[in-house]
Length: 129
Image (tube, rainbow, N blue to C red):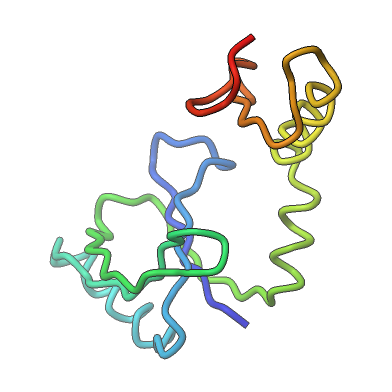
């Protein structure tokens, strides 16, 4: 199971937290203590995180977070199955998939063509209409 850190800014709506997957060997309890002590000193805390490069590969990185700049942070743990279910039930992902399915059968919309889900325009390298 992977641990995640969600950071909530004071002016962000609650559903727009910044979420980062933590590296496997991260001690979450120690990291929490560092975040708490860094707030009063207004110092930066290094966070060992994973950033996705593609579907199967992730890159280890260190994020430098200033806890005093965030209104709230939280840790949570998800299994791979939980993550897949979360993505499957995500309304934004569902809307993108539905849009792509609707445009596959249209003239000029070929299977495999890259379509921008927000604008409905085909991406670079895709056949032009």
